[in-house]
Length: 171
Image 1 (cartoon, one colour):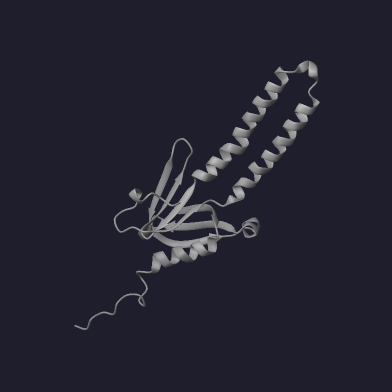
Image 2 (cartoon, rainbow, N blue to C red):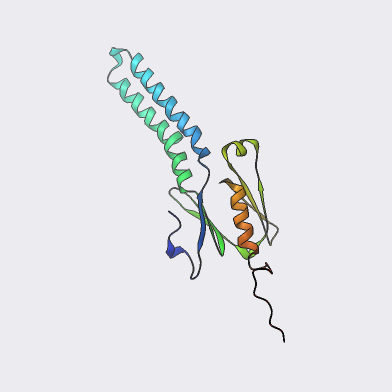
């Protein structure tokens, strides 16, 4: 599901809507598995003389760990989106308080991407946009960054391409 149509301008078309790469969920998934094992072991080794209050302590600690190390990173991943339209790049992040940034395509001078070894393994990368003010905008963990780079280049230079423009009339 993309950006709400009410948030797009008249004539603006959504080209791509992405979340950051799912590699951000690997560590929370491992923590979830370890947490399940640790809770099981804790219940197995609790002496009967410490019941029932020890089981409540185990459950409370496990729930706190689940919220901090599993649920919060998942919600952070879920709420971080990049939307590319024919006019701008829209970034949105935030679980409780939302932050957004819109970058008009007309302000972008250069588009580059970077792939580290782990990015190549996971199929993602970093998109680096240089603005007219010479300030770089970095979008991290973009899935299939090479394809997004091509789409960005097409969006930026479609109107500048003399092949796509109608020929000038003779005066």
